[in-house]
Length: 452
Image 1: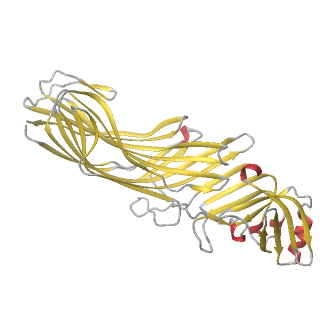
Image 2 (image 1 turned 90 degrees about the horizontal axis):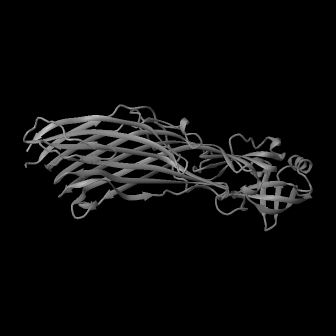
Image 3 (image 1 turned 90 degrees about the vertical axis):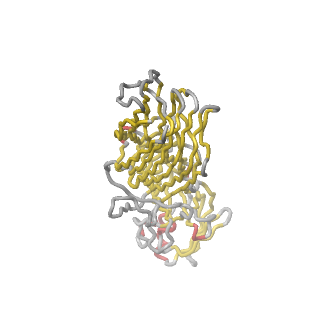
């Protein structure tokens, strides 16, 4: 039979709007904007402190991560006290020098002499390794009035020991361009990956009767994440956890399905790889590890020989998902407006189907307080072309996925009918807890007879 070629272009209407994120390798402590270093109230121990972290090294660094920490004993956040001009640490002491006697005298009156409170230092004071804060349990204090210095006898401790709750926010201002698409040109929290598929790679097969060959392929993605969680330490339970995930996906794929004998339906899948960006990590408090996964798959089955090629170009510049890990009913999506161009060529036809799809997932793994609690969840987007062929005079049926394809009385007596639809779904999930389809649509593309 002569090759039959058909071309379809498709753009789905948008469902909504979008936002922005960056890489967390250089995350370091900054003073939360809620603190005024001239305020003498910061000298008074408190069981609630705000700890911010940023990627930006400028003087007015924006917060990329904010931790609201509640503790079992009062805390002094030394970086919030403007009158503290020097902090020195040894194995078992922290020495704090004040620049004026008024602040020193207030510390003398407010800091418990028998300890039972914590000092939090900043890495700029050379008390801590790398871009970290240090947490010290105070056992006792000694004062030097002449030098306005206090020396605390201390033991180093950590978030898990002192915390009663952690309230953590990851955020960065959202940014759209004039087309409503995501942009990635501001400081924030962004990740991206690219995969190239080698030419003429057999991506799946069922010897000796079926082979699927990727003639060419390129997969690319970028994502921005904002989110929040609250963790109660005594109960070891999350009180809230959600993420806003903004994604832009791009894919080009040329695949040929070669079936040489009757083939029962099967679902085939090939993964070109997984990209793991650096973890978003505040040592001792939490780590958030993103993973970006691409997959290529197909539902294939035929009653006889089938040779079918599919070239697909996919653009999704505006996907947004709100995933509530605690309650799937509060999860929702906007955007996700695929722009698709597809070309097909059929050189040999039999009643059956060859329905390729791409699969992209953003997976987020959260570890709280060094393993006291961990959970994984995210979203998965799946665009698929559902292609069915029906050869005239055929009396055979074949199962496709979860339904049966029945031959139909088509008018092409010397040819075959080709039916095609574009299906797109977005699914949210929390591993070992729940999975929910947040968006699904199927749009008919073509139902046409082609002569041999």
